[in-house]
Image 1 (cartoon, rainbow, N blue to C red):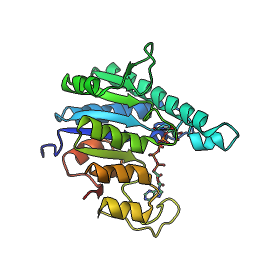
Image 2: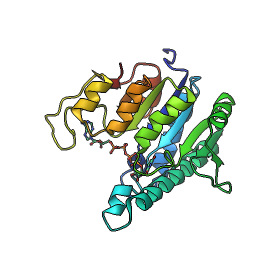
Image 3: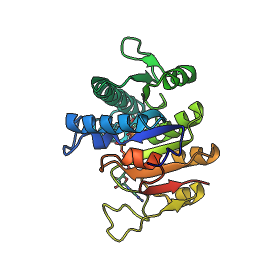
Image 4: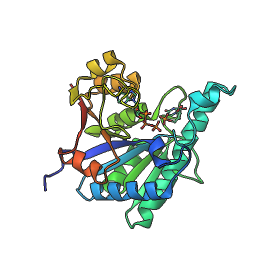
Length: 238
Ligand SMILES: Nc1ncnc2c1ncn2[C@@H]1O[C@H](COP(=O)(O)OP(=O)(O)OP(=O)(O)O)[C@@H](O)[C@H]1O
Ligand SMILES: O=c1ccn([C@@H]2O[C@H](COP(=O)(O)O)[C@@H](O)[C@H]2O)c(=O)[nH]1
């Protein structure tokens, strides 16, 4: 079996994917399956930090379209990501692997605050580290959070695990003629305005020279395959 290509990564997990076949919430079999994949990936010897989206519970933009202020809606979205972290942490630990949630917010009864030193410590201790609460600021996304945290903790790549198998010329769910890219530069991804990830995330990745790999988590084992350099996904780099 091929050796992993990376020593430390941040995996951005789709929140929406955690809902499984439902349109809302946390589907336990899906969470359990993703926990298995993460544990298997971690057993390859890679230090794994995970940022989870909140799209299965709350997106700030949607809440604000119903009359709540955007910063309040975004705060609700960030809290949703912490719920997802707790669900995944519980699933990972139930399966016998050590995990730790670190939050962008001070909430001592629930989880420790994210600091670079805490993240380094728990990763070096062999835990899967779950990073909740986004950046802690409204008007950002968990895609941007993943790139930010990756830069902060010295990860070598951001793996965006989602429900499509790469970046396409248009949304493949809406346009069946959309073409999939094997590789893009950060600048091409920004110029193309491909909605799979926000431009802020691509811009920060360009600034910090971080590769992003967009791939589907539908297939069990896909995280491990990407870590070994054998998986199918779009590499955004250079
Ligand atoms: N050009 C494109 N290439 C690939 N996917 C695209 C493109 N444009 C839009 N999409 C859509 O982007 C979605 C993935 O991005 P999205 O940010 O919604 O997911 P996520 O980050 O996985 O969700 P969450 O916010 O719940 O974490 C896919 O469902 C896909 O349909
Ligand atoms: O830094 C951040 C990260 C996220 N948010 C809010 O959370 C939701 C859920 O995140 P997704 O990336 O969309 O899954 C997002 O819609 C924002 O409302 C934030 O404000 N700041």
